[in-house]
Image 1 (cartoon, helix red, strand yellow):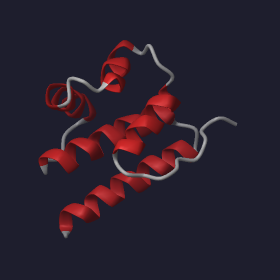
Image 2 (cartoon, one colour):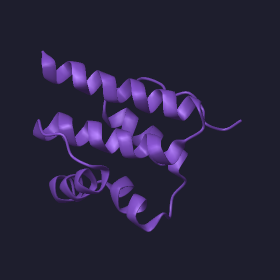
Image 3 (cartoon, one colour):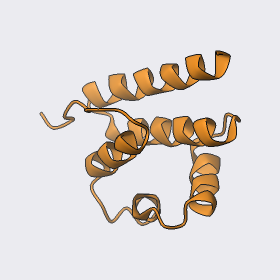
Image 4 (cartoon, helix red, strand yellow):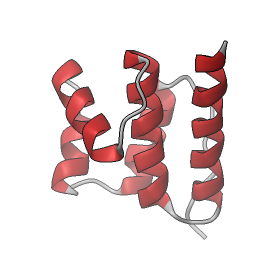
Length: 93
């Protein structure tokens, strides 16, 4: 049960960051949450990205983060959908 509490806390933090317009930091927190959900270990954003790229090489959003070729808001929405979040508030104001 402790695992789910931390995961939910990370998701809530990501939502707050998106609402505040800090999409880059929100993506980092979403990556951390996703890696935590998959591994049970809390990782820094760069570690989480590396782990997820190895675990899910087919996920294009992960490569886009490294290349910064895709809008971070779009990436945040795609990752949140993978994590089972139904909707994400818009970071565009």
